[in-house]
Amino acid sequence: MEMHATRTLNADRETVWAALNDARVLEACIPGCQELHGSPEEGFHAEVKQKVGPVKATFKGDVTLSDVKPLESYVISGEGKGGVAGFAKGSAQVILSDAEGGGTDLHYDVDAKVGGKLAQLGSRLIDSFAKKMADQFFERFQAHVEGTEDDPLAQGDGDDGPATS
Image (cartoon, rainbow, N blue to C red):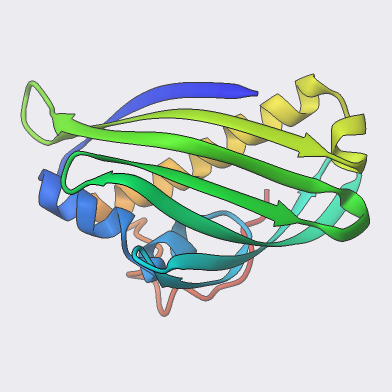
């Protein structure tokens, strides 16, 4: 599955870059994230609970950053295993640039694969779920970097459990 999108954020590149590299921000913005720790240099370990169609799973995996060009871009790659539910793995190239009217354009190209029971659900359901997850992440991320009231970090410690729909 592939996804491509650009979001314009009302924040400077330094603010956006810092948030993209902050485990606490990422943990608060990833839907269903139970735990995320580590650093950009060493990589991150994550635990995420999700329900995709009839399949519920807790995915545990590692995420690494590569091809890092500070304030410009990086490639984020990871793989998570969800026991009998299967696995998900993929990577995303994230590119920051100055937006025309001010702020920062955040562009991403994602390539992801799933296996196990998840793969049996069909590409239409998986693609729809992946788009929903990406949209939720970037809505939360945008709220954080723009400092709006929907900022998940502004509502306590960011450990409110998994997002529900």
